[in-house]
Image (tube, rainbow, N blue to C red; front, top):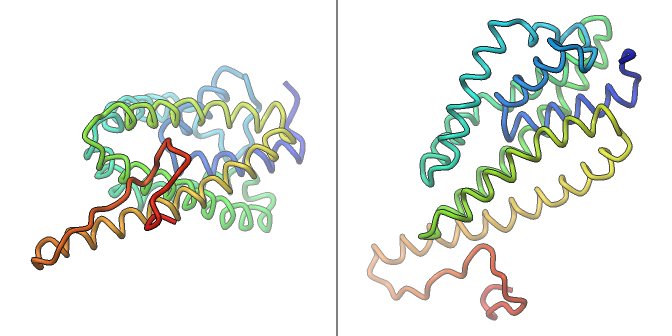
Length: 221
């Protein structure tokens, strides 16, 4: 495969930043494997990811994260711990697409990539926290598996079809903002409900964060 052109590099930087906010270790592993086996000519700033030691470490962490992310409660704790890891890592990976030879572009990529990582992480963490309030584990596991599939699909699209990726990425960002707002409102209501219960006041209940019905109660509008 020939060297990546500018649209591919821009799409890859965005994809690495965003995907790091969802599955950081999977991003590192897939990117490293792509470079190691020659599937994608990695930019100089990312070639270290193809080192066998990095591949082994990221592969182990992918396994750990895959298991932890399927357990309700533990997944939210995992997200909390990784708040300080995913965002700077996403910025670093996005900057690595352009490397030291393109200093200005690398700085811009780091800023934007970090922002994308923060958005993805916030959407994932708040949505999963809201889903954890459900007594059944299936929605949580389903959401986790969806995230597992979105990351490799996004990285592949960024390299192979950058324009298609750009269109889908815009939709994903809009959805992420909606999920953050929806989940945050639910979690804020849940905290207020707990405080109300402990204060001895009547508990009106909290509407679910996500519902299948088309009709919402008046208090949820």
